[in-house]
Amino acid sequence: MIEKAIFAGGCFWCMVKPFDQFDGIEHIVSGYSGGHVENPTYEQVKSGTTGHMEVVEITFQPAVFSYEQLLDIFWQQIDPTDDEGQFQDRGPSYRAAIFVHNERQRAIAEHSKQQLEASGRFNKPVITEIRDAVPFYPAEDYHQDFHKKNPEYYKNDRAASGRDEFLSTKWDKVNV
Image 1 (cartoon, rainbow, N blue to C red):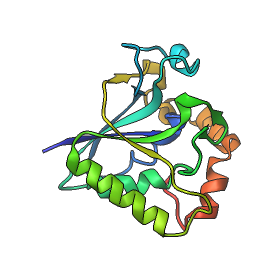
Image 2: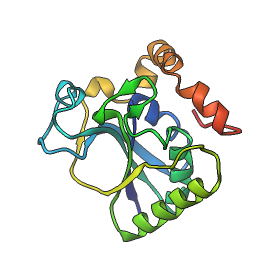
Image 3: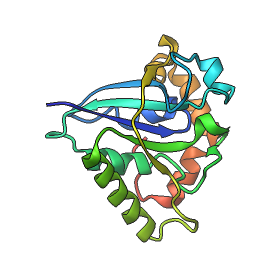
Image 4: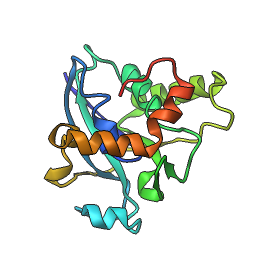
């Protein structure tokens, strides 16, 4: 049995590699979700006019790697207190969100969010939205597996983003 999970966490390039190293994760696709334009392009989404967010769609085997484990990794990739984007990527297309496919995923995501809030790890409220899954559109081919196709550019872009510096202040060990 396989399931899908969709997470928005700012730049989708930075959201693939942390998940792309575990048994039970079958496939990760960078793309767009949450907007009102069918089959949007990167340029359209980046403009902030389509309502879409950059997301990753993860196909996984829940018996091998659970949705709870996916959420644990997700939270360690974002600033869940920032509603204006993530790190150097600002604007509505770079906001963080969890798109749930069913009520079971919603309950797990809500519980996970409540646990993070109760942990006291952040000084501001955890405001990451949990939304119903809506159509997912794969991004252009050059965005897929970007960290593998362009490792040096990916490494430099991620380093310049401030993401890893922030995450290292909040988590003992970060999956990157």
